[in-house]
Length: 101
Image (cartoon, rainbow, N blue to C red; front, side, top):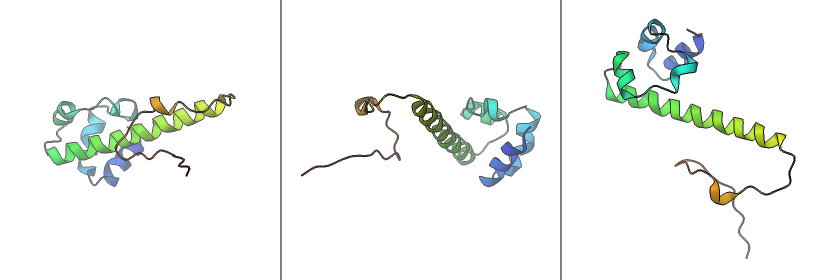
């Protein structure tokens, strides 16, 4: 198991689960597939701990997808403006806006 997952769990204050993740071969490739049931199977009995892990995974996934989207759009040499109407909405996400008076 990469030390990254162990470090990530420790940053969340949940380092006690690192051994269970390692024993069950849970690494970065499968983290995004975790849900409440699989976390229960790993021995994460606390609902709060499961929610903390899932919330962190969601934010990591959003950051990675934003980085991928940004790198893909930088490869695109068109001067077309982004289609704002089709942007996905995230609760804590901020969008650029222009207001003219």
